[in-house]
Image (cartoon, rainbow, N blue to C red; front, top):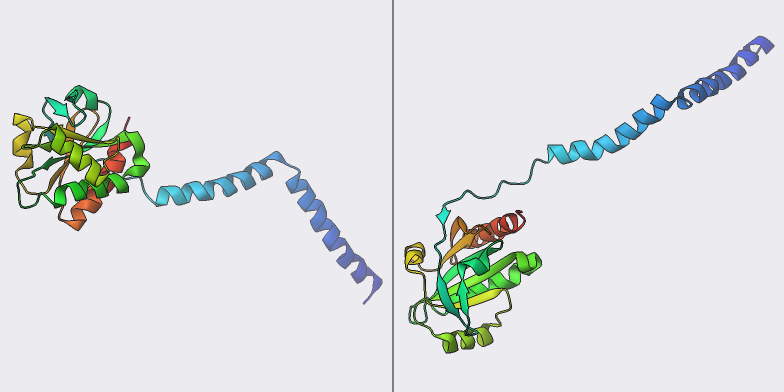
Length: 199
């Protein structure tokens, strides 16, 4: 190869290096690099969609003043600013044996929500001693409240056997579910996490 040709080839890499040095030495180049690196994860997050909306308001949970299993009075004011799942315990009904077990399972499966979600069981025909026995037998924790009696206005809310209600921290009913329906149990777990996270 002639000497002139070799000189041209030797100057090509040098020219490319010089040009690259000029480009990388400018501020806009690094701004562009950082923008590309950080916008990719953001774009991926946007494409995945927003978190699901919380379930709609279906009505209000009525006020009440009842005796808790521990012997003291318990009112709806004790539940304000705290979401809860409510059910009706019925010690003389055919489905009585599954209700406490269902609540125990919900207590376990919602443990990661901590104090943001409580469980509240009303009982038509059990006194404080009966409820204390249920607490011991089913391992009810601090988040599971057992109440003697049912608010009169709440009775129509529990017309179906195995009914579960999801109530938000402003005592608004956000969902009705059936404890004997696996799909409903999955939905109440998902919805409870959404409601418990609301301010």
